[in-house]
Image 1 (cartoon, rainbow, N blue to C red):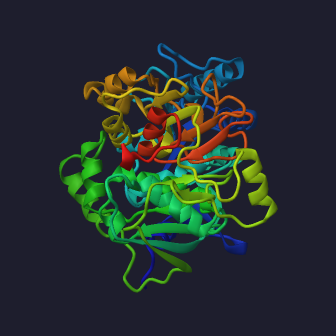
Image 2: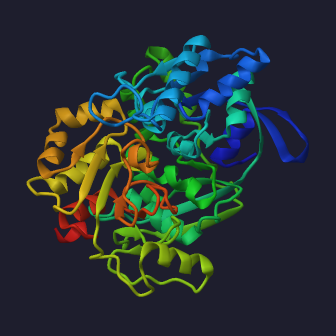
Image 3: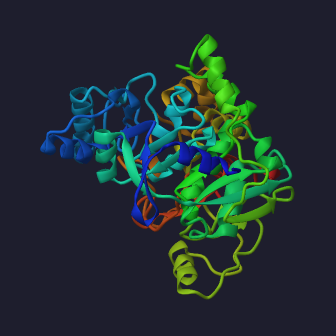
Length: 458
């Protein structure tokens, strides 16, 4: 019987079917970070339970860890306590943990693929909604709540309602100044923040086939912003090449056996999706959000068009904008390049290529935060860090940083930020912060200009 990639992986992991469309799923990998793991550990301790398969779980410090040079934890008390809980309990339950100064530490959705521990066909969970990022590996990956984190630690399984399948088919190709971030912002606009609810999204089509892994991570990362907890790309040679370069990948004959299995993971030609949208990205211009939701998107030089709903009106008021305004040229106070959406080496390379030999506008605070220690080392070896520093950017240690407005990495009240992150909710980057989501190229151009700028014009 034919099926979608999602259906095949899901079905192969069903331990037991329950009433109400619920399934008990076996989980191949659980990822932990310091914010949602302490409560889960506490639950295990209170109930006298152990972690069933410690080797199938890894833990890192990313959300509240400081990004300042020389850091070893958070710069505020509550964050320090969370990190200490994560370290102590990981050791207690024999879970591999990567503290702030470890050479493999990083944002969980960045460092896990680098290590080669997420492979096609897996089920992966983490107490973080952007776990959908890892679906770019051809895996079923989704975020879960803290009580579910505890349940997976104790049983290596989870009870879930099976989502429907949706396909986002992307035709065409883009120019050098238009990236996967621009594409996924345009998809968010087309689908809206609720359009993917109850679905697992598979991204496919000529554009996706020609996209590298970093761009695929960006697409899948923002699936949750459309209400879909799962985003996926079918594995292909691009995926396999990425894995073969990663650490801890199976050697020799076992590797060939794994590759053979991964090549059988695809959506059948006659598989039926519950819904499908098709977009041609060939004429797409750089995109940016104007409001307080990821679907409030416009091209840089096009006027803001919105309905008269209370949602849109409140968003415009909060952002200090009006219908008909153009984002191009709007003054900028803060620029942030990083996060699990755009903190990978390719993102930093692209931005540095634009920044080289230029200076950040005096009115702008600009931060670059690598997604992992590996990304940081590679960027420093290639001279990328020096380019940013010379231009006036702050070069930081890996972590979630300004995406979650923690430690000292936040936007001042009323200030306007161009950010490569995934959420522009009210107060997301700090109380009163006005956040515009954009690509690394748009962010870099805006830092130089001191206003929202088009990288094609620099």
